[in-house]
Length: 92
Image 1 (cartoon, rainbow, N blue to C red):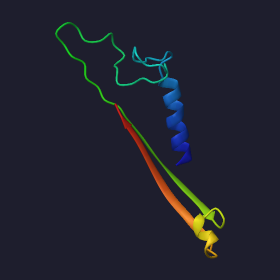
Image 2 (image 1 turned 90 degrees about the vertical axis):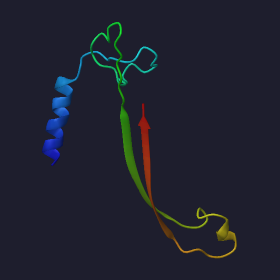
Image 3 (image 1 turned 90 degrees about the horizontal axis):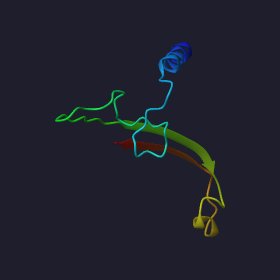
Image 4 (image 1 turned 135 degrees about the vertical axis):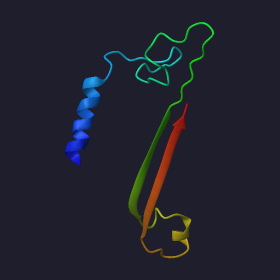
């Protein structure tokens, strides 16, 4: 599996465009957005595009008093295992 991922990453680097092709209003020239690499549509035509970027992250850690919160002032709280998953996405 790791060899396949490394091979795919190498192909992406080899075939990646040499210059960044960003939208005219972007402040980050490394974001390609949804534009095609051509000069754009001619008169009477319309170019449409969409881009979706998404990721997920899992965080697991033990939590004990006093970091567990105000309940620790009332009673002794046993250590707890926090297991959280975060999802983030952007659609343009």
